[in-house]
Length: 100
Image (cartoon, rainbow, N blue to C red; front, side, top):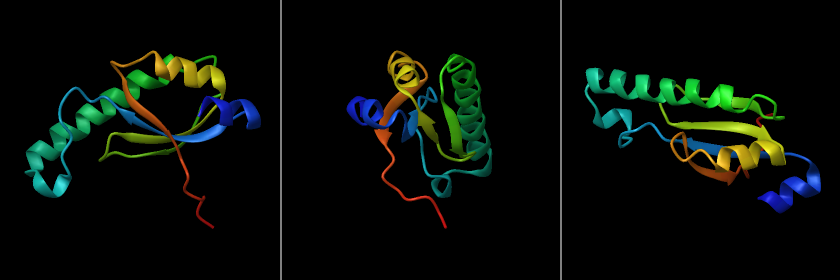
């Protein structure tokens, strides 16, 4: 991933957030549990945003019901994300094409 970013200057990635609890598909949760999980996702997203200040990270897609965000990041943002295990569980290259 770092090599791809160095080559192109930035890369679209999928960042899985650490929500501090196991994640479950909403179809398997009660409405109350869905709400609790959505609050945990929102808190993780809110915690992530200020940590990327000063990087060239841009959010391209955020979800209210799953702990993932799609972002375009530069190398500085990658290194920042990689040092935040309390907020970020994983970072993978986004191989999906943009919708047309």
